[in-house]
Image: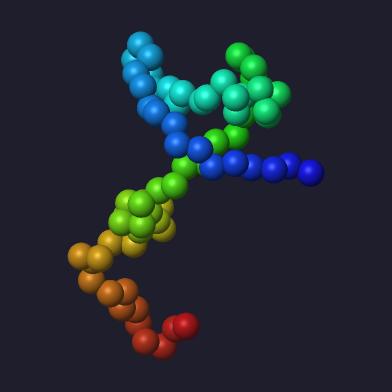
Length: 74
């Protein structure tokens, strides 16, 4: 059974990349060590989430509504 914990981490620049600093105690508790692959869940603000979903779905709020060219077809 997997258990998760919520933590507040600090994002820092490492070269040209960004890294999340994970407290040593949490790493020891999870059994993770340097080089291991882990899963990370990030809370995305609602406003950003809606914009992202619209771009994925191809929905454009400024676009005209879809109208069929010929009414006799479904």
